[in-house]
Image 1 (cartoon, rainbow, N blue to C red):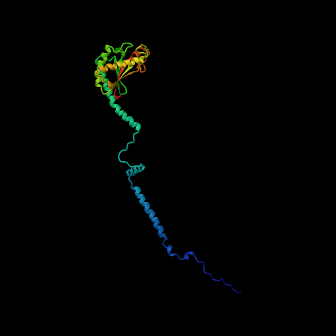
Image 2: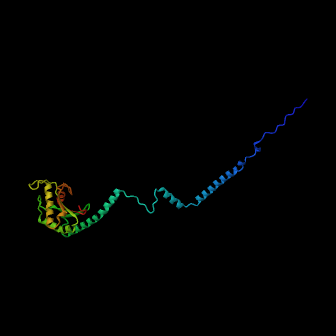
Length: 247
């Protein structure tokens, strides 16, 4: 028998036996450098965070949060309405103080002259009000000043002259008791005529006409309740009103 031998074949080539191309021999070096660069960046970042100033960080945060950096204290803008009210209050304050001073001056003079019971002095809205009872100025239903009324007004003239910077309103007031005479068809005519009579007397005593005005209110502005005799008596009056605001 003839023995057949298999032909001897060389082993298959292995990829490990293949030579590495020249261009891939240093690829690991690039990766190594990338890793080292990242680690260096990390160390720098950690160093920066470990040495920052808290105050500087807060200041920077505050500055960046504002559209514009402003040095010094910042005041909130005042609303126009509030600004106007503050301005008016600043103007009214001296007038109020002056009104209180005039009020005390008139009261002191009236006490010394024995007129404190017949003439009331009050202050309201930068005005000094002298409320004079009609009982010392006029007879019932008439508008001519009595001798007692003229004497009372004469005592007020020096005080009114000292307040020459202020305008003076002379207001006539009545109670609601109807009146119907040929001269005074209603309380409107009576109150207006009484106010005009007081104005004319003060004018004759040297009070400037440009300062004064006469107004009749009839029974439209009562001070008290008209249901009682006392209330109606308080409502029948002539008021001298000094306007400290220059009306």
